Image (cartoon, rainbow, N blue to C red; front, side, top):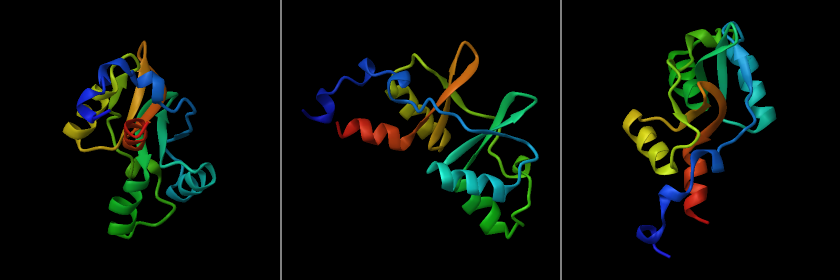
Length: 132
Protein backbone atom coordinates (compact mmCIF):
# COMPACT_ATOMS: atom_id res chain seq x y z
CA UNK A 1 0.00 0.00 0.00
CA UNK A 2 1.42 3.39 -0.93
CA UNK A 3 1.15 6.48 1.20
CA UNK A 4 -1.44 7.88 -1.21
CA UNK A 5 -3.63 4.80 -0.75
CA UNK A 6 -3.67 5.09 3.01
CA UNK A 7 -6.78 6.78 4.40
CA UNK A 8 -5.39 9.05 7.13
CA UNK A 9 -8.83 10.41 7.94
CA UNK A 10 -9.87 7.02 9.32
CA UNK A 11 -7.27 7.10 12.13
CA UNK A 12 -8.03 9.52 14.92
CA UNK A 13 -5.69 11.25 17.33
CA UNK A 14 -7.22 9.28 20.23
CA UNK A 15 -6.26 6.03 18.49
CA UNK A 16 -2.51 6.64 18.72
CA UNK A 17 -2.01 9.24 21.49
CA UNK A 18 -0.20 8.49 24.73
CA UNK A 19 -2.72 8.54 27.56
CA UNK A 20 -0.25 8.62 30.43
CA UNK A 21 0.42 12.22 31.44
CA UNK A 22 3.16 13.47 33.70
CA UNK A 23 2.62 16.97 35.02
CA UNK A 24 4.59 19.35 37.20
CA UNK A 25 3.95 22.78 38.65
CA UNK A 26 5.56 26.05 37.55
CA UNK A 27 8.25 25.98 40.23
CA UNK A 28 9.59 22.49 39.44
CA UNK A 29 13.24 22.80 38.43
CA UNK A 30 14.72 21.92 35.07
CA UNK A 31 16.86 19.26 36.77
CA UNK A 32 13.82 17.61 38.37
CA UNK A 33 12.04 17.53 35.00
CA UNK A 34 15.13 16.14 33.25
CA UNK A 35 15.30 13.30 35.79
CA UNK A 36 11.57 12.58 35.34
CA UNK A 37 12.00 12.43 31.56
CA UNK A 38 14.98 10.10 31.84
CA UNK A 39 13.26 7.76 34.32
CA UNK A 40 10.05 7.71 32.28
CA UNK A 41 11.76 7.43 28.90
CA UNK A 42 9.70 10.38 27.66
CA UNK A 43 10.45 13.62 25.85
CA UNK A 44 7.81 15.96 27.29
CA UNK A 45 6.15 16.90 30.56
CA UNK A 46 3.10 19.12 30.94
CA UNK A 47 3.29 22.16 33.21
CA UNK A 48 0.28 23.13 35.29
CA UNK A 49 -0.67 26.32 37.10
CA UNK A 50 -3.27 25.67 39.80
CA UNK A 51 -4.25 22.40 38.12
CA UNK A 52 -4.66 23.94 34.67
CA UNK A 53 -2.23 22.91 31.90
CA UNK A 54 -0.39 26.05 30.85
CA UNK A 55 2.66 24.81 28.97
CA UNK A 56 4.96 21.95 28.09
CA UNK A 57 8.65 21.25 28.66
CA UNK A 58 10.25 19.13 25.97
CA UNK A 59 13.68 17.65 25.44
CA UNK A 60 14.14 20.31 22.77
CA UNK A 61 13.50 23.05 25.35
CA UNK A 62 16.56 21.83 27.22
CA UNK A 63 18.74 22.14 24.12
CA UNK A 64 17.41 25.51 22.98
CA UNK A 65 16.87 27.20 26.33
CA UNK A 66 18.96 25.60 29.09
CA UNK A 67 22.06 24.45 27.20
CA UNK A 68 22.21 27.20 24.57
CA UNK A 69 21.78 29.95 27.19
CA UNK A 70 23.86 28.26 29.91
CA UNK A 71 20.98 28.48 32.39
CA UNK A 72 21.40 26.78 35.77
CA UNK A 73 19.65 23.45 36.32
CA UNK A 74 17.67 24.95 39.21
CA UNK A 75 15.84 27.21 36.74
CA UNK A 76 12.07 26.80 37.27
CA UNK A 77 10.24 25.25 34.32
CA UNK A 78 8.07 28.34 34.15
CA UNK A 79 11.08 30.08 32.54
CA UNK A 80 11.79 27.38 29.93
CA UNK A 81 8.40 25.87 29.09
CA UNK A 82 6.76 26.34 25.73
CA UNK A 83 3.56 28.29 26.25
CA UNK A 84 0.72 28.61 25.44
CA UNK A 85 0.04 24.90 25.26
CA UNK A 86 -0.90 23.96 21.70
CA UNK A 87 -3.52 21.25 21.50
CA UNK A 88 -5.78 19.25 19.23
CA UNK A 89 -9.12 17.59 19.91
CA UNK A 90 -9.06 13.83 20.47
CA UNK A 91 -11.53 13.12 17.66
CA UNK A 92 -9.52 14.83 14.92
CA UNK A 93 -7.82 12.74 12.21
CA UNK A 94 -4.09 12.26 12.60
CA UNK A 95 -3.60 14.22 9.38
CA UNK A 96 -4.91 17.29 11.25
CA UNK A 97 -2.33 16.67 14.00
CA UNK A 98 0.42 16.45 11.39
CA UNK A 99 -0.75 19.68 9.78
CA UNK A 100 -0.88 21.50 13.14
CA UNK A 101 2.62 20.30 14.09
CA UNK A 102 3.96 21.39 10.70
CA UNK A 103 2.32 24.82 10.78
CA UNK A 104 3.39 25.50 14.39
CA UNK A 105 6.85 23.93 13.89
CA UNK A 106 6.45 21.70 16.93
CA UNK A 107 6.73 17.96 17.56
CA UNK A 108 4.26 17.41 20.40
CA UNK A 109 0.60 18.33 20.86
CA UNK A 110 -1.59 18.12 23.93
CA UNK A 111 -4.78 16.19 23.19
CA UNK A 112 -8.02 17.52 24.61
CA UNK A 113 -11.50 16.15 25.18
CA UNK A 114 -14.21 18.53 26.34
CA UNK A 115 -11.53 21.12 27.11
CA UNK A 116 -9.51 18.78 29.33
CA UNK A 117 -6.06 17.47 28.43
CA UNK A 118 -6.32 13.68 28.10
CA UNK A 119 -3.11 12.77 26.26
CA UNK A 120 -0.17 13.76 24.10
CA UNK A 121 0.52 12.97 20.47
CA UNK A 122 4.02 13.29 19.04
CA UNK A 123 5.60 13.35 15.62
CA UNK A 124 7.10 9.97 16.53
CA UNK A 125 3.58 8.60 17.05
CA UNK A 126 2.68 9.78 13.54
CA UNK A 127 5.78 8.27 11.96
CA UNK A 128 5.22 4.99 13.79
CA UNK A 129 1.66 4.89 12.44
CA UNK A 130 2.93 5.46 8.90
CA UNK A 131 5.12 2.36 9.11
CA UNK A 132 2.27 0.03 10.08
